[in-house]
Image 1 (cartoon, rainbow, N blue to C red):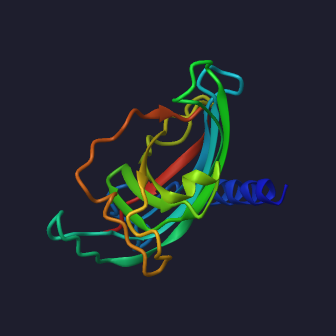
Image 2: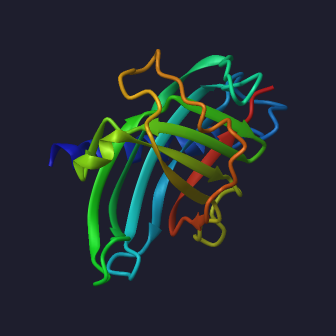
Length: 201
């Protein structure tokens, strides 16, 4: 119950932050001097074959940069923020189309903004199933403006990776995953919610 209350608070915070910064340009011609990605919403639908997921997040700072992909050198403002997700997903190992419930959250350790797109990483510090706590999540975000006719147009995708620095915690923890030249996975349009991305000058 406490975790769900915390999730509701984070989702509400993201909802309150997003309209306040919605006027900021993606390219940084105006607005705050730091990159950010904030928002929240839902993908899928309850009792659908693939399940439903809810996300809420706020990430500020960066950009995380590198000189050589093989030897990352991080720069920019320290990244701060938090990501929380929960819901259900189709068991990839099961043959009975079983839906598995999940809850997971962690601090944002990496943020890269490019126009209306952003990538961020959060290592899982609390997760259900607990086995997921050995992983981190690479998130892909796309801000396509405010919902049209009540329907959102923003998109989100993710990839589950092994936590490359499992013994570190922020602010020392750094992740090269979101600056590597990885292709985005399949992206899903939010069924409800909004994402706001800002690229600082």
